[in-house]
Image (cartoon, rainbow, N blue to C red; front, top):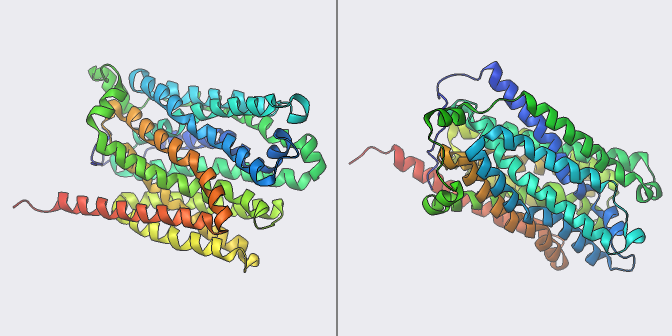
Length: 436
């Protein structure tokens, strides 16, 4: 499970103005695309009522709505594999731009869909199809973005670059949360159900097209350009080489992606709906608290990336895992008895989730340049399809057993994160030990 495959960029040079421009444009474009992918979850409650029969029990409607949300994750591997394949053979930038276009169109279409009352069973089926297309697009976007920025910066700043990009993606979640908060405050429940729920999806389509324009200003990574110059690109199927030659790296990347998915999907994406349906908070109150949690998440991502560059991923994972375990447990345990502490404890939980910002550095460094996009994409998307896709369903089932179901799930993944950090720390120490 080596993490020593470095980029060809010189490790000693500082970040240049060009690096900062690349990071900024990549993060902004990623934020707008991620808004498109996650806006669905912020309107899961109203979408569930509009796209399923009115007589359906609330718990079943919630389960099926989250099931459609999960379908986006289940579609990620196929999109990720295809986009990564051509990204390793034709270039990072082309696929980086194509993924946004494939996200914008279905988001726009979601805002125009008829409801169950208008076309019956075809409504949820159409929603499912559009969600699958979104999943295929995001499958290439996230790994491609990490690889793209990592190959533009010095090797000693890869943690910072990847965590900054991740913070940009989480800013897309914040944009979705703020949009949902504003719409819930501006419109009544009747207006929301009648037409206002469409507004965030229509905005998402516009955001997506703007992101396509932004990426025209980016350049191909110098690492990939050098491979092209030396004619050292992967021969045949890059994915075949990944599966045959880099299985330990795939396993490590999948385990870390499971941790990442638990933090984002449960604490950030599912919790606003759970605060409303399980704990009785008003939608505006839940979304306002969620917005502050996402601000904490973005800050935490950058701090984790800086720590990984300075101290290494192993110690960062251990400290971050312990912090997330404590803060998330405290937050979920307080919802029943200390409702007045919702905002500060949710913000603290969001900050602790930011420890996942150190994960992309390990994923990127685990694979050699020639198959890096395919290696990261395959591992990340397969794990997200299995773990991220099933997480909403598993947490919904755990909630039938205990209101602390989300805390139990996140806590279990924190332990896995800590153990992985210990293993990475020992491996790094062994590599530094003198021979003999």
